[in-house]
Amino acid sequence: MYGNQDIATEVAGYADVAKQIIDLAVFGAAQNRSYRRLADFTDAIGNRVSGSHNLEMAIKYMYNAMTQDGLDVHLEPVKIPHWVRGKESAEMIAPRAKSLAILGLGSSVGTPPEGIEAEVLVVQSFEELKRRASEAMGRIVVFNQPFVSYGETVAYRAYGASEAAKEGALATLIRSITPFSINSPHTGWQDYQAGVKRIPSACITVEDAELMWRMAQRGQKIVVRLTMGAKTLPDADSFNTVVEITGWQHPEQVVLLSGHLDSWDVGQGAMDDGGGAMISWEALSLIKDLGLRPRRTLRTVLWTAEEQGGVGAQQYYNLHKVNMSNFDLVMESDLGTFTPVALQFTGSDAARKVMAEVVKLLFPINTTKLEAHGEGTDISPWMQAGVPGASLHVADNRYFWFHHSEGDTMTVQDPQAMNLCSALWAVVAYVVADLQDMLPR
Figure 1 (cartoon, rainbow, N blue to C red):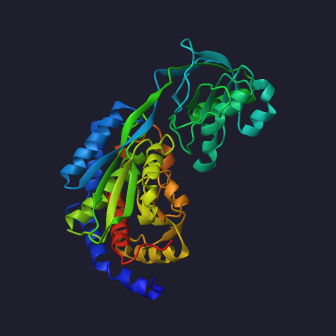
Figure 2 (cartoon, rainbow, N blue to C red):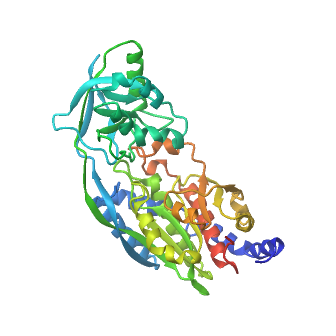
Figure 3 (spheres, rainbow, N blue to C red):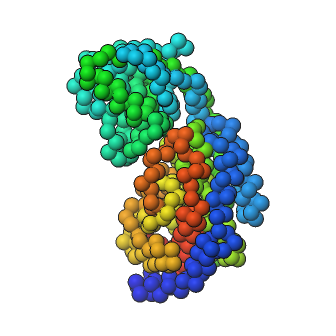
């Protein structure tokens, strides 16, 4: 490996090509292309939950679209969970009649056909549930936990059902994991603990959770009827969608870009993660359109069943980890494609020095910041094994407003922001794939 000055000089030599990529994406013929592709895709297919016919259609759609784009596409088979929501409803019976907006949680069991009607216990934390355990027996437990951050508060969605079931609860209704609500429920995956009775679990709106909390504080008796037709079917066949520009010198070495193609079964899955999938395709389109071909292979993977815990990505890792030493950098975009602010990176100090030089090439779009901690469900197995990883940091303060809700539609997407994300993604991927040496581990 050469010294820092050498690498700085080598990377600086890519200033012209970086500017060409940026100009094409932001001002040139490719302007707004990733946004149009996303709109065409999500308007045609809609949402696409793991195991669904829509997800199959989505994979076929993308395979055809990327093939027509002149790229080398193939599908790699995987097995994925197949949970079906079914018909669902909830209503408050007492102290007054009111319908409650709900979204059942992924992997939840259903209720009996006639539903579950029971008195409610409202708590604001797992600690309060433990303290009031004797009141939970035979009740529907409502969690009205405050939103601290997604990473922290999501524990209630993930583990609320099992924690309540341990105390004899019949079902759980969990305040949606969001800082902002217009009476919108948000879904997501939940995890049953082994050896604990499986009870139905759904998210309710922030407004209804707070309403029931206030009623409970007044000592009012709250009764709710919950009906859920949710069920889990046998695992379904699916595919990770893989598209490549083969490297001219080291075709076996890979820079991997990615987003996930599946979504929840509400909204359009435009933000989570249609945008990430589209910019990972767009990056290859930009490089192809400019007639560029890096030393190493650029590989975009559109993962399947990310929402169920990175299922498609884990199977990809198991299949390809034998070639781990040839994976140069793994990249994932799954926190929206709003205006980019930085690249997040996980790797050795020596690799970080290289990446710090690479992001300087993004000066024309003012995103030269390199931050710690590349993240992503789908690339985490690689990063845990020591492969350098990068993720896109965007102005995501509104991301969790729409996340896993009916609000995740094309309306939250901005074409200009997507142009900038595509440019950043393409420059970083191309330059790393074309440097003399792989990133040092």
